[in-house]
Length: 144
Image 1 (cartoon, rainbow, N blue to C red):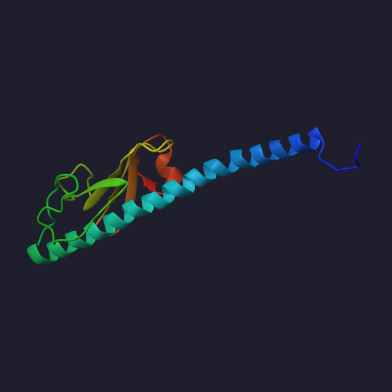
Image 2 (image 1 turned 180 degrees about the horizontal axis):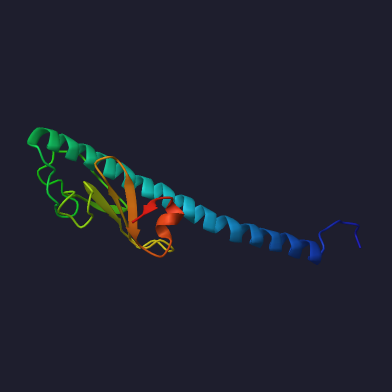
């Protein structure tokens, strides 16, 4: 022996097991935080469309009609770009999302969440539906 100090096999195995346990806890938490930040994009889009709807109602006396995905229809020309959502303005009385002035749908089917939907009312309340079971609760939204 040359007198060099080194780690034993047991010590190395303990370190590897600890790293595995930490990774098993950290990865799901990181995925949840990433999806929450992406849901924030949807909320921002809802806010832009809600403001456009309120301006339209102020000028013409009623909300704009529900349009095709990713189209502002007759609403004021606003720049809405989305990476993780498709979106459309809606009419509170005649829409797929009753009571809403805008809705977005998550695209890409993220694992553990699915393609959930978000809507915003004229008062600014945000609701969630669809996607995988419990997706809205994990994101912190009111479920519809």
